[in-house]
Amino acid sequence: MNVTLTLNGRQVTAAVEADDSLYTLLRALGMHSVKCGCETTNCGLCTVHMDGKAVLSCSVPAARCDGHAVTTLEGMQEEAKRLGECLAGEGAEQCGFCAPGLMMNVFALAKENPHATEAEIDAYLAGNLCRCSGYVSQRRAVKRYLESMEVQP
Image: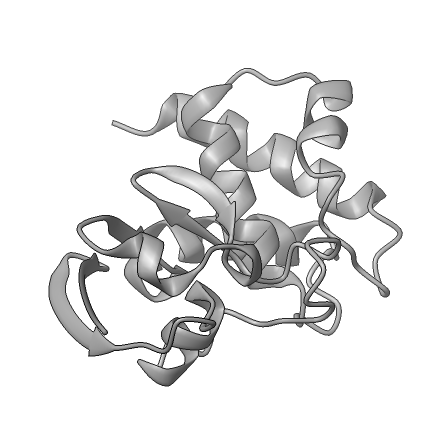
């Protein structure tokens, strides 16, 4: 079957199999920021935005994205640059494997709760596994990013 979606602002039509996930489709379309570490919705590496909401692309059937807007990190380069600077500034970038999924969740958090407390940040990002950072530096970076958003025009 064919699905048509808006991917990072561009309309795309692609053939999908009935059992394809959105993750599989996005990787086939060259969206290499979308990673999969578990295929069980436990790691957060495959997080993308669907109609502006964070979703785990490994759990969304590709057929369900027909007619919807999907955004990956490739479509958010300006925001990614600013958040990347905050992550690097706090020593939170480490190996970077988890960074795209983490970033997509942070962008959703910034939209939904731009004045999040540390406890709210922790709760929001609980599904993002990172084997390198210990999370404290990530929390500092997210707080720094949210504060930087307050001073942006």
